[in-house]
Image (cartoon, protein in one colour):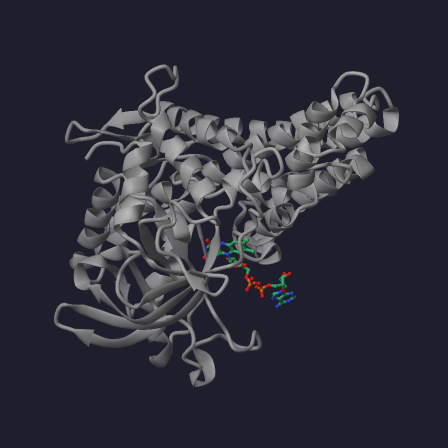
Length: 480
Ligand SMILES: Cc1cc2nc3c(=O)[nH]c(=O)nc-3n(C[C@H](O)[C@H](O)[C@H](O)COP(=O)(O)OP(=O)(O)OC[C@H]3O[C@@H](n4cnc5c(N)ncnc54)[C@H](O)[C@@H]3O)c2cc1C
């Protein structure tokens, strides 16, 4: 099947119900469930864009077997491919103002990089290398939607889940001729309720002792595999009204705890097996990072752009746009937006072919932009609160306007430039991104979705090529 459209996406979700739980109940059909239907429709709209002939932008490419596939699956071999892929990513990110973070391109580029680096997975047993290539092709040719999970649950954070015999984390139970049985739990899997497949990858460093190797696994399976259970956190979309809940009614992507209750994984879906060395170096050796970071920084740029536009509209509505204090606050939004844009451009200008024959965006500007966003985002939200103040709370619902006091609301909530409903619509958007529980989850997401930001920053420093800057500093020091 070439690129799917929106109704094919929804139909597949209906035909493959997963063992999904929320708020004490099992979900029969995500596409009609109160918690998920709004976001399901939004993701369907993204897939629909792949078929929109009126879009001037390229959303697809022709694969080596002459089929039209989504551009996020392309194996880039030129800077032009990176530019095309970046434009496609931006059009998906702009659809939600960047709040829908796990658009399917996030996972598609990870799989592309892993497939290109198949020799790494197959360095001890060629079958694992072939498996990852086949899986990538299967996902691309069926245009499947993926979630992923990296982090094991732990009884205590004093020691890793594989220490002291605590078997809570995902581990191998036994081998069979046709595959493996795995058990354990992981947190989290964002977009799991609305995904077709789950990619399970190792993240933390696993010690080299024999017992720990049971945790050194990577595989990809369908979300409706028997024994696989998802518990989604409670819904953040309190209602379906896009006036009352402009973001949460459409973009609550869901975060799930994943429980593997004796799940069977066929050998052909296993990519890493009992191999601590491959497991511990998978992310760095596949070079997936710079590709994911292109998607992440593109999303960040779209998000900063959205917040900047929103802030500008709010200041005009409140007639504070010429107040220097407010202008100075809002200028921080410009900085984040422009820095994200510049880093994306720099990453493509300095892109190079990597050892797997893939054109790789320069990771340094992308890592810098990504890292700074984890602390910039909470500040951007603080700025919206400082600009909006009580106007973010004086936001009646649609039903209030239709009630007997509707006339009074029309009278008392209008501004110089906006009538009461227009003003409320604008500030409900500000409320949903900066005050609501949906907005709170967005802040937590930006801080942590890609791991502990302090450890990520430390890694950035450790892996950054510092020789040239040290030499330049020494030149100045030694000059006397
Ligand atoms: C909204 C959301 C969505 C997510 N989605 C996904 C997903 O789709 N897939 C996925 O695999 N994961 C996902 N994650 C999980 C994410 O990968 C983890 O949250 C992240 O790796 C951090 O791990 P942790 O939450 O266990 O926090 P910890 O690592 O325990 O860190 C908690 C705090 O303790 C501090 N800390 C930790 N160790 C030390 C130390 N030694 N010294 C000092 N301070 C320390 C950290 O800096 C941090 O502030 C998601 C997380 C969130 C919040």
